[in-house]
Amino acid sequence: MRVSHFYGRTGRVIPNQLKIHDGENYWFQSYGTNIVKINNGKVYLDERYYDYSVTTGKYRNEFLGENLQETRKKIKSGEYILTNLN
Image (cartoon, rainbow, N blue to C red; front, side, top):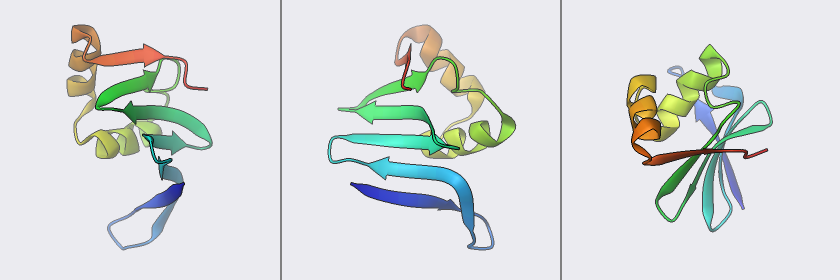
C-alpha cells in the first residue's frame, strides 16, 4: 500500500488529505473518510461525503482533475457511481 499527501503551493503537506494506492484501487481520503475510489477506471464517490465540505471538495477536485459541476454531470450521466465507501 502506498500513501501520499497533498501538498500546498508552498510545498507544505496538507494534513488530513490522503491519496492511497492499495495495488488495485486508488483512493482519496479526507479526515479519515473515504471520498473517492477508482477501480479499473470506474469512479465511485461516497454518497454521503463526496461534497461534505469546502476542504473535502477542493481536494476531491484536485484528485479527479475537475470541478464540482463536472463531477455532478458525470454522476447524473452514470459515469460516476454514488455508493457507500465507509
